[in-house]
Length: 263
Picture (cartoon, one colour):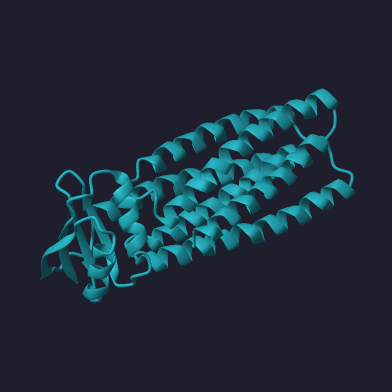
């Protein structure tokens, strides 16, 4: 592993950082980028391809020039450790609520809760996949983000099939109280997850963007299930519950499409 330090005089805000990250995108040898904006310095940890890295930095016309290159045995980075801690936190929260929602959804006959539980399970897998991306190259991170997107599409197709089966069959009226109470707790959990992910310094990277897209969708879904529970009681019909189940899987597909565009 090599460590190359650049001085970039015109790098004085996060917009320049984002520009540099974008321009270095695609260089497979890069293991980590460490930005020191106050001191206008960029440290690149990489395995070879120094000439390509230099060209990508210099062509931005930010006054960048190389200060030094040296060998390093560092393979773990503070940024990566922070990402792993955040991802483990949201993974555990989502998997616990998957268990809660799938159990209460089946007991209460609520398709909305079942659909949201499957979405929580999908998110758990996505966060687990993202853990494998931490510390990897930019290309690897984008590939993993795409894998997460395709996984969500497959889940949505399975969900649509179940919603259709319930529309065509005679299903018992779901328990609206359970729908509302469990969804309120799930909403709080997803709010915590979104706050935790926002603390990541690497939230602009593809795999971290993917996790934030999923969690943002979950907040919307929880509000929808709460509204469906109210309508189930008001209309004395299971149709609002089935409709929210359909909407959940449409949101999953929309989120998956946004993720696939990241790469």
